[in-house]
Image (cartoon, rainbow, N blue to C red; front, top):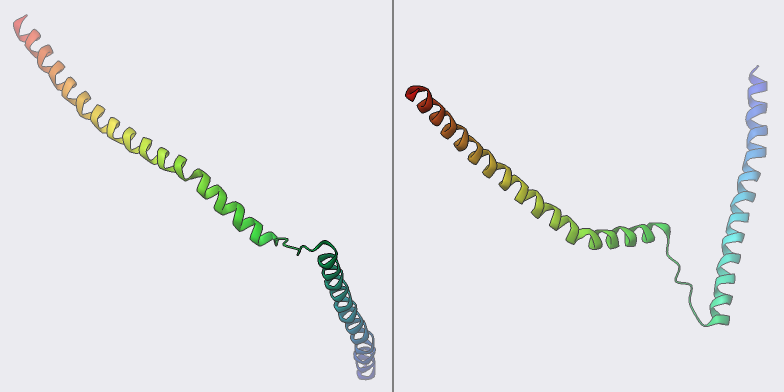
Length: 112
């Protein structure tokens, strides 16, 4: 049983290590070829590759949307403030009207 475990460890290492090394070397070679291709394209066109990463693009979009919606957000905040003021004014006027109505109703009952 112990020999079987050792055998699996040795075979696993003998198989996994070369695969890992070959994969790493192929990735490096691909990266190097892509870099050389970009450099050749820059030389041919005279322009550099100014492509953005997805994170940079998301940041730019987020900032643009924030800048574009800022006036709308300010207007909404102003309207909400006016609505609160209107509600509080209406509540005060409503309570004053109700108390006046009760007085007039009360007077009408006394006079009748």
